[in-house]
Amino acid sequence: MENENKLEGRHSVLEAFRAGKLVEKLYVLKGCQDGPVLNILREAKRANTMVDFVSKERLDHMSESGKHQGVVAILSAFHYSTIEDMFELAKERGEDPFFFLLDGIEDPHNLGAIIRTANLAGAHGVIIPKRRAVGLTATVVKASAGAIHYTPVAKVTNLTATMEELKERGMWFACADMDGEVMYRQNLRGSIGLVIGNEGAGVSRLVKEHCDYVASIPMSGDIDSLNASVAAGVLAFEVVRQRGFAKE
Image (cartoon, rainbow, N blue to C red):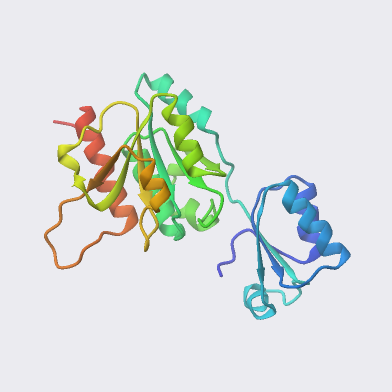
């Protein structure tokens, strides 16, 4: 595990919660239910922080001080924005909203690269889920190559519920999937959300069912899939082309 905004020990972690620090994830020794740990768990629940109960061996591996006392917390390296911030940015630019929605991206380098791509493609923001996905760690911030400072990133509890809310605001959704229709044949103009799936499993069934289009990237090589961040880039710039923003 990388050393990025990591806190170890009960006092440090509890004070981080009480000080209002944004904790991306909390690791707690499996079976530990004493008073101080229960206090931390109550704070984590109040903050809607994801908690992972793990073995002592896992915590020992994470720990650099050797004094984790059964708890390790990972703090966010960057402040999150809201979806309203994204709509406001689109309004300021006089453009139809263009968002990236990421369904379970777990590699911080991929998330950073996708945020960078979103910025370069003129997208107004990136939406990620709270669970089963990487958050804004220091590695993500670094991999974004500065794009994180200009591209809003919002974290939501339920991706499909968010998609339904955005549909009510006029957005359409296209997900990347090799079984879909070739992207060049699809209308990706207007208010669009581009959905990119997990590095291994792709877009989940439920999220795919909430998409209006399933877009595939034509490929002629000997392997059958692209890296998630590369696929995001290819599809994003097809959106750019269809919007007419591409340079002649």
